[in-house]
Image (cartoon, rainbow, N blue to C red; front, top):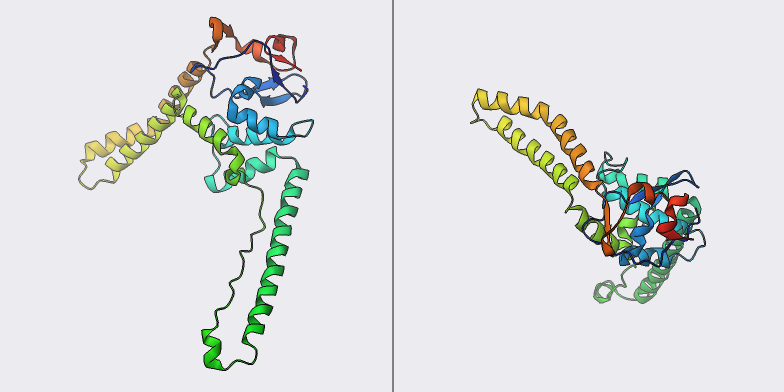
Length: 260
């Protein structure tokens, strides 16, 4: 698949029928999942795409993939701890040359800050030369500049992604799968509260324990139903429909939506 994707002449008007959890489509050409071209019609996503001036759009694609994997409950990274999740996604999605460039950029800032602090120390020492101890206390010392920490690039700190993150997370919360996950979390909290409450009767504790054991299976049923709901046909202007099989990138069926 050619990475530079353009929305075709027929303008797609997004409605709440947009498959918010179906941000990825399978590419027959690259044999992997890529960003659904329809998402490039959403302004915050288009800005990220257009800002990447590389021919293959590797960085834009990696940033959009990061947004998907970081916030989407369907992502294979969904079970990672929050403290480890972003790093794992970055290492899996961003090209090494980009991460190396970012590291070099941070190292340059560190070296510059260290050099400035060295100059500040020399100026502070010079200001104290020949002064009595009491006078030295009155001389205001120059403060050091901040020295950054050398660490892996984290898109969470990238201001250029904030609008896209806000849009995506805001709309995810309106979907049935998100509601199912919230219901599951609330169920765990409420049942655990009953079990840990010293005023709960043995029958209440037993009932809550049974329901807690059954909760994962109930959650899976809700999740499957939510996935079916999300699989409803994408609505576009003119009351036309684009079926999932027509949205595969890289095959003949994609010509209706994408031109390279």
